[in-house]
Length: 187
Image (cartoon, rainbow, N blue to C red; front, side, top):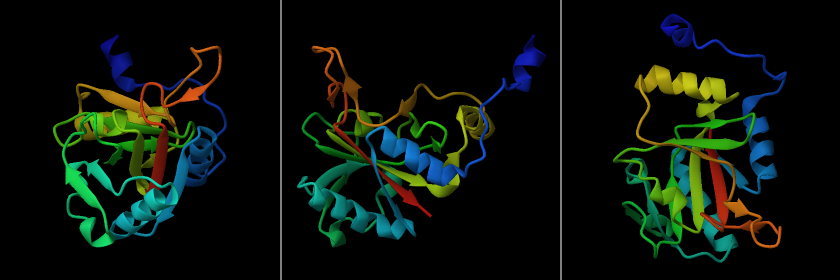
């Protein structure tokens, strides 16, 4: 039984005759996320500033430690490297990977990647490397096993803004998390 589980055999899957990056973009937009792309990580602050200005959002945010060295201040923003608090409106995170088949972001918990940054803020801005966009869940889990060996305390899947239809069967965005999810794909 252990050998069978260790093999991680895959069940039948739908045809995947599409390219991962365009498919991810299409699926993410279908989930009410917005998507932008930049040519380098250095271009991310300008893209974030443009998004915030275009949506009349505050020019202050919190972000994960991996983005501490970006030129946030030079682009006109105040970005703190820490976990989000209830007063923070914008959170900037990375992703472990993104799943093209569903338009979903996958994040792993850890000291340098607090979940509150993506779950507590009204606006979640996710930075995704195009090279980390995988075809499906199977590839995402394989990547976790390959790079980490075991699962972290929490794995979060983010498929667009938070939504519910609990109140009068009307879909409401942001009921249990961010109202907005903006994804920046870095090539």
